[in-house]
Image (cartoon, rainbow, N blue to C red; front, side, top):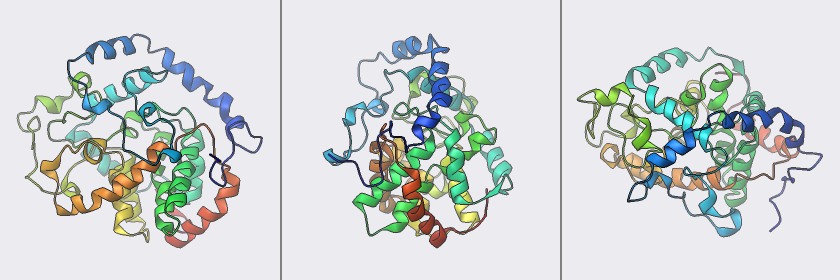
Length: 328
């Protein structure tokens, strides 16, 4: 099947991938230094029933993706050591107190002033250490996701823009924040992690909230069906970007804000966990998050987009919905 318009093979002279390859070779070598982690995690995951967090992700039209079973594999692969180390740190240190401190730290949006496209360019310098599927800069993934949505939903330009925007909160990692506080699947803090949270059974042992008699219960500090808008999610690029968009008054529909805020909440939008916290609005918005996830996940490919060719179209969307220099 021919690639969507605007895409080039990774080896093309027009692709930025060839220019950045040597820079990111170090990311591949770094994983090797974590040596024994893979052996330990695989040993811990030997349970009689399959871990629900290791199931492949949502179905998509066959022509739009490679073998779906090869995505989000948390049991093997060359990047597993790096991925497990990131989640172990995340699940140890993401607590109610930590999240509240991050809200206060970044809630004034005084880190940097820049345009959306300048933020996209910053992601040329970031490889997501929680992602088992890719080892190339996150900027390419932004355009891959956006173009996948554009092809399937040509009449929804706001949705195309969401594809470009969804991971821009990862600029936090370039501001000095550790990746375990920026990337990866999200989950509610202040209550017991549910079964489908990635590596749940072998990464939360040292999290102090799990020793708290309230936070370690199924509902934790929440009321039944309080709504996800009232839930304190683990801190990362989703929550930061959602709040940044609200602060800067992006002229996008409510669905866009919801997708940005919960696109990494796989235990909910894929596996159906945390239903006890959901209200009617959450259930109404769920199909939008699931539709977005098809493109966020299944457009990942070593065929990297020709960013120069695509940039004018997305600049037009930025000018329409979130123009100018913004507060980050």
